[in-house]
Each structure stands twice: as C-alpha cells, then as structure tokens.
Image 1: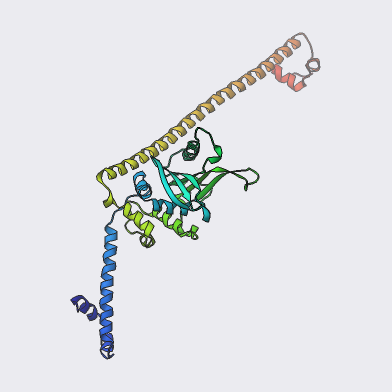
Image 2: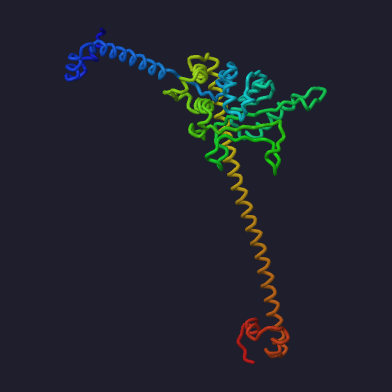
Length: 358
C-alpha cells in the first residue's frame, strides 16, 4: 500500500475507522477503492493542469482558420454540414479546395447525391462585408462558364460568412441570416444559384440552436477559444472533431513564421478597424462642419431675405407717409386723405406723426 493511500485512510474519522475494522471482508475492498480514487484524482488533476498550460491561438485568424479547415478536409465537411442550411440529401460528402485569399476560402463540394456546388467562405470583417460576399460569390458563379456557355451546367454557390461583429442591430436575438434570390410576392419561388449565410458570432448563445449539436460545438469553438483561453469547455475536448481543431490551434504546434503571420494578420485587422473609426470620425466632423456652414449660409440668406422684406415694407411705409404729408400740405383734410388713400384716420395720423383733429 502506498504512503499516500495510508495518509488518505488516516484522514478518515475515528468512528468510520472503527466501523471499517468491525466489518469483515470490507476493509481490503475499501482500501482498494480508496487507492483507485487516489490514482483517478491524480490523473484527472494532471490532465487539468496540462490543459491549463496549453496556449491557443484564435481560430478566426486567417492563418489558423486555413490550418484547421484547409489542411483537414473532414473538419471543413463537419463545419459546413453544421452551419449551412442543407437538407439531409444535400449534406457535404467531399471537398476540393480551389483557392485561398486573405480571409477567403473557395472550394468545390460534392453532396451525398453526387451533386456539386461551390463554396466561398469569408471570415474577415470589412466595412463592405455584404458587397464583398456578393462579389466573391458572383465571381465564383461566373468563372464556371466555359467557351460553349452551357448555362444549364452552372453549379450553385454557397457563401458562408463568419462575422466577428454585430452588423444587424435591429435583430438582437437573431445571429444566423440566410439569403436567397426570391420572388417579392411568393417567397417559395426562388432563383437557384446564389445563397448567402451570415453568422454574427458575438450574438451566439449555445441554447439558441440546441437541435444541432455540431453547430453548437463549432460555434463554441469559434467564439470561446482564443489567446485568453485557460479552460476549454469539456464538450469540445470530448468531441473528436473539435478536439482535433483544438490541437491544430495550439501555439506550440505553430512555427515561428506562422506565429509572425498570425500577428501580422491581427495587425492588419486592427489597422483597418482604426481606419474605419477614423474615417467615420472625419466624416462626422465634415458633416457637422458642412451642416454648420449650410446653417450659417441659410441664416445669412434668411437674414438677407428678411432684410429685403423689411426694407421694402419700410420703403412702402415711408412712401405713404410722404404722400400723406404732401396731400396735407395741399390743404386736404384728414378725412379726404383717408378716403383717397383707403387708410383709417389712425393710420393717417400715425404716418404724419401727429394727432390732428378733423
């Protein structure tokens, strides 16, 4: 018996020790049980300590995403079947990688029926995300045309966009957005060819899609694993696919050049974000300045207009007063002047600036 087991047994209180000693045949089994638990506790504790020592990189970076899903076809197939709105007979069975770009993966997929479709994955947030997704999907669609222009052979394109930003703030409880080309009055009538899926990762909550286990696991992986991760959710460790993805993004598994490329990616993302913020700030300041200028100009215009109106009014008043004084100098009475000018006596008196009795 090991010394550690003896220490564990010694910690049992006196009453339990007496009970154990008075129970024939049970003491050895109890000792064996305790020893097994000690070993089990040691193993579990060791695994947890090792897990805490591991450092992970963010899987949403360009380099890490491509290492996970570009080098492991089975992981990309699992991701697509979990996140794309595919029916049972449309599940992806094979994937052929076509090209890579900054934050973009293009692939050709084959479903269980033997039908093909093209895939464009966008993981890099830009201020023109919607337009960029439309451009990449349309480009993938058009590039299929051969010289014979057999349009009937064009394969549909699915655009999957994993966005680490909230861009649909009007729908706080919705984070998966699917788009098709549909009839404006009959949404069951659609033009097959382009499909878009946008997933706002910051909105994700595991309880929102309980019906798709792998969707929950992949979204937890994308949202809860990064450089600050100290404890990995147990369900990610237990699942063979997400566990393999975790191994792929361990910092220790990266070369020095890969780590430099990883840092460079986030530097570019940070710089773009700062430019976006600065441009918005400059635009707002320009807008405010233009607004002030327009307001001042409108104020001046209104002032000039009001001045002209007041001047014309004053001119008319002065002309009437001059005419009334002239008629008065000709010996006309106030009643006659009022009758001829269609003014009241009070108005005539006000114009000549004196109270004159009839």
